[in-house]
Length: 150
Image (cartoon, rainbow, N blue to C red):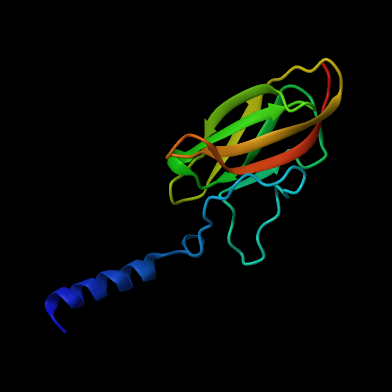
């Protein structure tokens, strides 16, 4: 075996030895799931974590303003976008935050988001990353909640 081939093999073996379980089988960006079908805190059965996992609030929770939204993410430049939609799908609040790590590592995120609705109603919290290619939402996690008026 030539010196170049041996060096490439050595580097490849070193990379495999340094890889952690979270590096293997990383999920690929997926389109927005159909409304009401996401399961924000569940993980795939193969053990791989999705790009974004929302831990709080849980599906069906009643949330009042301000609401704390938290979880973990492995997203481009650690940037996590959060928005709240009312029962008609209109955005009533939005912001972005950063996870403690990103772009190849999983970090934690937590942000508080204030909103106003005139009456208590069903709503949705969306957490996603923006595509580095065109800025469109990818890896969208939807959490159906009840927005408390006030």
